[in-house]
Length: 300
Length: 326
Image 1 (cartoon, each protein chain N blue to C red):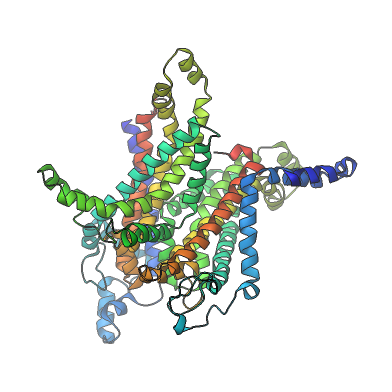
Image 2 (cartoon, rainbow over the protein chains, first blue to last red; image 1 turned 30 degrees about the vertical axis):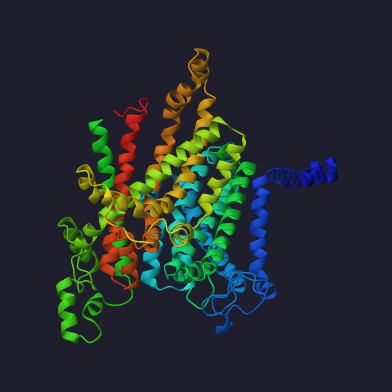
């Protein structure tokens, strides 16, 4: 609420009239600041981003440093989250592990967007047979449970970072294509699209300059939540041993490792899971909030 | 109705073909020679060549796909590289465990989800509402495998109330004995399935709660609800009979669509609880690079998802009399 009032006071009506874009930005910020879930989500997501970027500065010790004397040490004042079976500092490993989760989450969403959005635009814009062909293909992809398909792809092409990102990205393509298609369908019959065509705009220009910007709201909302599910899938793959390979710290891998010490050192499995949950929660809350702010019609 | 079912059946044929093609292509492009994998590194070149010919691996891709489809129609999913047993048999042996787990997870998910959704909607903006919605977003954000481990830690390791892993005698297998008056195996089975089904069902419960809530809120504002109230019908009857039946339509769709995700989640849940189902079979096969088994499991699970989606479409007509297919 406070942010909203500050924005209102600072905004100068005359300046705003001249800048419709600035005006809509300000109105967006105002509505965003009012949404509790959007703000909470943003705080969580930004915290994880900062953790990932400044991991070397934030981590209290080297995440790879083995200290067998302190093997399975429980959380204490000295080591906040304790140590794992190699005596490595869990807090430092969680801090570095955020890099894998975010990298896979963001990169695989970008892969899915790069393939899915053009597919949806083309299907929605041209309609007819092409639309039918693309949609049936997407139906086939949607039939596969995503983690199972991702697992199979990673098993087939090796557990490297690139194949994990591609696998999770490809698996998520249908959702983005469908969302883009349905927005395209409603936008393409608008008058300004006709006007652009009359003025001689190329199909490419109509699709990407005139239609796409008006389909962005639901795509952004879905991409935010899509990152949450990509992070969960990556953690699942790592948990099953098909993610980032040891000794690289990844949250799913740390959790899988902690399973063996549930009786003696339950902290090893507990904290990485909390890290995953908070990160995913952040993206989900942000997505939820953005949906309310950007496009109230989407509220399900 | 009969024609509609036929029409829908005709529509899923291309999808099923497409699913088989995708699975076939992924496995066809895997680096490495299946014949070599089956025979091991020490096999002679001639033996490998002979097996390649026998498996049809020396044929062009299209013909291999044809052979694959033909074998599929005959119920032949190939032979496991590792266990040397027909893949179909391995799958049939494991299927009941997975179906049992998925069924109980759906039960947990839909009962908790629908109840939480109704409470949230009927007491909108109350503490109950906020609590239920917060827990539900937490539930969607929680990794299945972490929840499973935490449940094991609390209920099995610390309290010692429930078994850590395994299926026990199995709930369905224990039913005949229970009908005969011996409830021991049934209780054993239920004790084993409780934690895995909560683990797998929590995400679903969270999703269903949110859907039920928003769907109920929309229905409650409809005119016919006011009419029911004006007629003097008791509130409980209005909620349970007039509102819920209509509110559940989108929820049933979600349940059907989530079935696939649930089977996917079963892969993780089964490996946490050492549950002897398809998911564990798949993970073991993936770790051992046992490709025919991976192929078989992915195919069976995906075809299951396609059929369930069809079933959901048909169930619509029953729960929503407004939908009539000609």
